[in-house]
Amino acid sequence: MAQNDKNAQSEGFPHATTENLNIIIVGASLGGLATALALKRLPPPHSHTITLLERNPTPLLHNQGAGIVAGGDTLAFFKRYDRCGRDLAAGSIRRQYLNRDGEIVHKEDMRQNMTSWDLVYYMLRANVDGVKSDYCEVPKQDDSREGHVTHLHGHKVTGVEEKGDKVVVKYETNKGKAGEMTADLVIGADGPSSTIRSILAPDVERTYAGYVALRGTVREDSVSPKTREAFSERFTFFHAAGIQILAYLIPGQNGTLAPGERLINFVYYTNVPSPSLTDPSPEFRELMTDVDGQYHRITMPPGKTAPGAWEKQREIAAQKLPPQFAEIVRGTQKPFVQAITDVLAPTNEFLNGRVILVGDALAGFRPHTVASTSQACFDAMILADMIEGKVGRREWKKQTLGYARTIQERGLRMGERSQHEELELEEHIRDRNLASKPREDEVWPAWAVGDVE
Ligand SMILES: Cc1cc2nc3c(=O)[nH]c(=O)nc-3n(C[C@H](O)[C@H](O)[C@H](O)COP(=O)(O)OP(=O)(O)OC[C@H]3O[C@@H](n4cnc5c(N)ncnc54)[C@H](O)[C@@H]3O)c2cc1C
Ligand SMILES: *[C@@H]1O[C@H](CO)[C@@H](O)[C@H](O)[C@H]1NC(C)=O
Ligand SMILES: *[C@@H]1O[C@H](CO)[C@@H](O)[C@H](O)[C@H]1NC(C)=O
Image (cartoon, rainbow, N blue to C red):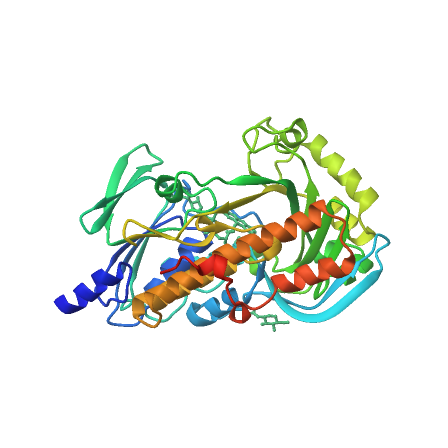
């Protein structure tokens, strides 16, 4: 044991160990929940004590009702850990590109699975802490010999400090109480504006990319037959100067996959120049000021867009988009707006590896990469593998940082090309296909992993 500890020490922390660790996870959205589930499911003799601290004041996060492309690591994660026994996703069998008149100008066979944020969230909660919902059954399998997870909402983390070989996490509750907890390992899964990262790497900035995504859904059975056909089992795209829009089918209310009840989900990128998030242009401010006059810096919540600003977007959609896309944009009841941003932490471990970052807290990708949820799932699985001793510490770091930096940069390049350059259709297709390359086929470039010792 002592010998083991010494080895572990020289290797740094975290490391392979069968000790029962006290683990705090900051943030209980998809990244935090995925990490909690992977660590909980480690086989005996592992049995870790895991506490999720989520600042949101309600027990469940509010669903934005939007789609997620379930990439390879997301599917692998659910295959490995999920016990709900239901399908995660709807399938698309083809990618296609339309012209302004709505005619198909390019198509290729490609199988992809698409899911919804809320279905992923509820499936994770069912597995992590047994939350019942209309989305899925709570697993019946006995998990009492696995790690134990406590989910605490209304706990906003405000500080993190090293104390001997432990870490002290400070928080404030939504009832105004301050408290602290001690852990062996702290995971920052607190998203692209991460508090943990801002404490440990204060120079990192989250910057605005110069364009936004207008997002929304419509029920499959509420559109014309021609429009329904364009998106049924199809991942469909349209590009024009300063505009790109894509749409695909996702599970409907309560995660239903019943034909007719599924949702057509769109992501519509459009340039809205602004010097920065803190110094918005009048145009940006108008779009991000809600119906009650409140300004939102990064996300305008569903259904809160001011009618005037949204009406303007509906007009532009009618003028510039193919009819099928115009119909779904104009038909959406609760649009939301997401400012596209970039952020990347310099590394993923701090305080001698006792604090690590995962998911969007490590690297906030542009959505073109369709990789945010996959990154969160991958970071969770490989961390569990390292603690189990299946993956070495250096390999863990190389893979997680390689993924974060390479995909972050790829998303930035894709977005800049697509929004700010005049590309031929072939170039758009090439960029898109690169983004769906399986992670296993990636070789991380030297610039992304050269500093991993
Ligand atoms: C409510 C919500 C809805 C979303 N909906 C969609 C969607 O529809 N489609 C889509 O593609 N992506 C969506 N996302 C983003 C998506 O979840 C992430 O891009 C991806 O899954 C990786 O997530 P993450 O857990 O690393 O970060 P995030 O999802 O950003 O989660 C970070 C979590 O940390 C919590 N947190 C932040 N700071 C603190 C703190 N100081 N103390 C405690 N907790 C803290 C936040 O409240 C949040 O729950 C959504 C995110 C959220 C939070
Ligand atoms: C992915 O989509 C296919 C249909 O193309 C479906 O049969 C399969 O069940 C889906 N996978 C998951 C994990 O939901
Ligand atoms: C989804 O669940 C809610 C809450 O239980 C219920 O009211 C609603 O009817 C369900 N919708 C569908 C389509 O099953």
